[in-house]
Length: 430
Image (tube, rainbow, N blue to C red; front, side):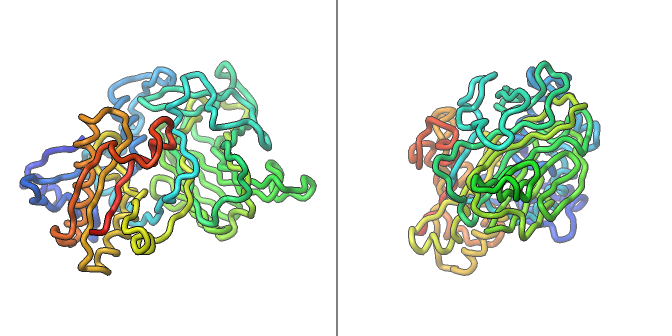
C-alpha cells in the first residue's frame, strides 16, 4: 500500500537510514517529485521479491494456522526479525540487494501459468506427467493467500515417494531459443529445513542413449537446477543460504546457449558457463523430497518461460516502440517492485545516449477487475515509470505518461498466458 509521508519525516528517515551509494529506491524516497500537482513517494520494499510475497503477507497478516489449504499462516518472518515492507530497514535491504541484480526477463512469452484457470483440487491442463520420472506424489492446485498454487504432497499428508515430476505441454519443441528466461514463485521453507527437499527445473532432451546419460536420474543431455530453502545448485555451481519463513520467493533463471545464471530474490546463486546441453526439448518441474518428511508447503505459481529479446535500442529502431517486460508492480498497485531495476537502468541509459528522443510511456492491463480499476491503475503505473526516470535526471518534457487500461490487448484475456502479455509497459518513440 502506498504510504503518504510528510516531507520532513522523509528527510529524517533518509538521514538515519540511507546507505552510501543508495540507488533507485533511496533516490526515490529522498525526492518528493513535484509533478502534475502531487508529491510521489513510493512504499518501502522488503528483501524478498515480488508481488506474490507481498500478497501473501498482506492476506495472512494476523492470522494463525499452518494449513495452506485454509490460506492462513503464522507471521513467521516477523518472528525471524525480517523488516516489514513499510519500514526504513526494509527499504535499505531491498536497495542493497537489487542494486546488484542484473536479470531482465525475456520479452517473448513462450509459456505462462499462474493456475488461475484451474479449479482447486484439479490438475492444470497445460502440464503433463508424460516425461522422465513423471508423476509421483499427489499433485493438485490449491488456493492459498489469494492465489492458485501447483502443489506436490504425499497422499494423506504422510510419507510418500522421493520425487514427483511434471512437464510443460510445449508441442513440437525441438530446442528452446538460444537465450531464454524462466521465473516462478515458490514456497522454499517448510516445517523444517532440509538438504533433502528441493525444486528441480528440468531442461532435458528426448534424444538420448539411456546407457550414456550425464544425469543418473534424468536421461538424455540434461540440465537441472535445484532450489531449496538452504541451497541452489546446477551442474557446476552451488550456493548456500537460509530461508525459514514459509513465504513465496522469486526464482529467476537466464540461459544463453549453455551458460546460465540464477537468482533467488535478486541474489545471484548460480553462475555456470556449462549448465545445460542442447537441444532442450522438454521443460519440467521436479519436486524432490526425503521419504521421512511430510510436506504441505511444496508449491509454486507464476511460472513464466520467455525468449530473450533484442536490446531496447535495436527494437526501437525497427518498430518505433518496445515493451519493457522487466518493469514489475505490486499486484493491483502502481508501486514499482525492485526487480524492475535492471530494465529501468537500461531504459535510462538509452535515453541518455539519445538526449533528443521523446517517449510516450504507455500503461496497459488485462481485463481483470473492470475499467473503473484498470484505467486509473494503468495511468498511475505509466506515471510511476515516468517519475522514476525524472528522478534519474531525464527531462520531463521528453516523457509523456498515458494509461490505456485493457483497451489495447496484445493477446486474449481468456487464459493466464494471454493476460500476462496484456499486463505491460510500452515505450513509443514520438
